[in-house]
Amino acid sequence: MDSRRLPSPDDLLILLTVARLGRFNAVAETLGTTHTTISRRILALDRQLGGRTLERSPHGWELTQLGAAAVEAAESIEATLGSLSGLISQDQGALSGLVRVATTDGVGAVFVTPSLVRLQQQHPLLNIEMLSATRKVSQNRSGVDLEVVVGRADVTTAQTIFLSNYYLRLYASPGYAARHGLPETLDDVGQHAFVSYVESALQVEELGPRWSAQLPAPRTSFQATSVFAQVEAVRQGAGIGLLPNFLAADADVVPVLPAVFERQLPIWAVARPESLRSARVQAVISALKDEVRDRSALLSG
Image 1 (tube, rainbow, N blue to C red):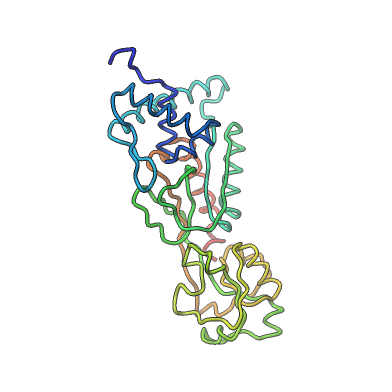
Image 2 (image 1 turned 120 degrees about the vertical axis):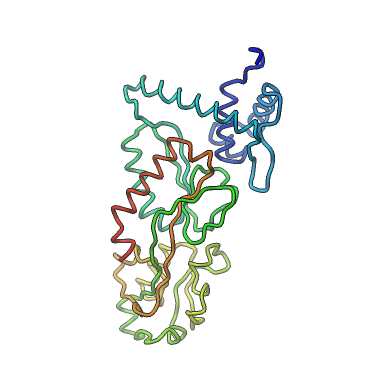
């Protein structure tokens, strides 16, 4: 290749970020620039390489064969710069830069947050952004390096990594039980007030009471988009709640029909293949695995 046509290392690193995040807007925000600048740099890289590196798909920007080869070169540049940074900081194993993690509310607070805090303490130059929302896994994963989701993880353009299972069970406060009694069968649950997610806003069907035919329609309901609000509503006596076992463990609530009903859900880490080649993302996954392993009793209890 003529030296005048050698690709710019900066543009290669931009392409690598596009491959990981899938959207120009997300890349621009990460790099502190604009969508137009990202688009211009990718076009310049295409001219330097003599072909297109990206193509549109319903899931965002995807690499062409040429783009995949260019990303391999970009990863080598990234690794070399990381080694140089380690030499400068006298810490060969140091991680630096930004990693973005999207996660559900409850799992994010109880498991993802402590694992990320511990990782950042080990690597003080690492910056972390955690986005919390209870939603199903995204097909385009725009703007994040890694997703932590619960329930089914039906994706075609990403890899899924199993982390653990946990349980949804029925709970009530001691005060509610004293005032209204507790159901003796699942059919009896329909005679009680019920605490759950706002069904019209719920994307993960397995978290809702109507996902299976086992739970009847309640007499009245208290619905909230936050699982922490649901836990508090159950504690305050609003009704019987369908809650994660790891949140109910310290919530001063009593189990309802524990021998009759429970729903097991998996927790997954999901990322693009390009993101999984990032040392930062691999470090996050390792920290998550350590966290759920060390607290397996809470998840299974």
